[in-house]
Image (cartoon, rainbow over all chains, first blue to last red):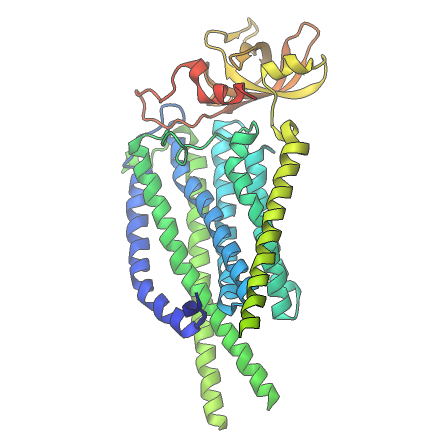
Length: 239
Length: 54
Length: 156
């Protein structure tokens, strides 16, 4: 755990991962988009509109994944007083917020022609909107206080409180009646999506994952540099 | 290629969904990259300044 | 050093306990207090059990019963039956049906029962199921009353 507490060590690991992650992002998006737009069949009910799923579902998955990353980082920050963990949460939040917003927007754009409405206040859509607001709240708390440490503590506590929303999002479609369809991939009896459609879905999901790695490393380096600068400034002031 | 672009009667919704996704991801990546680079330069400049002071 | 370690462990313990308590509390509230009111719609059996009165506005969801769909002579009014495979309810609707509206598939309608016990819908939304297939193939659950969307709700 404490091996990663060292920014120099993080930078070394990040620099080793970065070129691979960038190449993987380009390749996976290339292959993913080809299969999503051309190399896969239309759906027997939805027709071509099924293709929205290939940008909607990965965005929704990543919105939840990044939230868990942010919550784990927040836990480490609060429990171990781990400065790098605190910055990891701060670096992840805007990426997670973007994924969540994209899940909501692409979902609405699928819903209008398929369901007949952009939006409905069912358990799934509402809990994902709550997740988006949790991200915004986390980022707002960081900016709300002069004292970086206090701001980081408040934001981390919010991230941990909001973690309870993750199982609610996942199981909302089982616990309550919703307009949103039930799970298609992560279900006990196996996926109910045809293999030809799982190819673009998984390629796009992998592309989103490596994209996150790349952008997360950039944002982490930015946060580490900012921290360095503020330390240098406070030392200089002390002169 | 024509077939590739033909998304049926709901094409507007499909392309808008892809357009939003691409725009948001590209903007987020470029902005993150730019601010990382700028911060890298700031740290280098601050270090150079300190060396000059001493 | 030993004291530092225990303080750290204590912080982790308190933090974990707080998170566990919060999870328990929120889930308890959702199930004990929220329960069915967090559901988007009632199904035909719920409507029977609750004896919903005529004129009361609510959402009705279920599957469009196979062979029940028809259009009135005015060309604008649609009639179909919504079923949850335990009970059925006739629905009438004047308006535009969404793309995915089909017999054997899910719908969520909004409206109220009239004096004759017919649900007069003001909106009809199509509910997609979890199956994604190329044209010409059959999904895992093709038969209406083994449709997971219907059966999964039957036990409730």
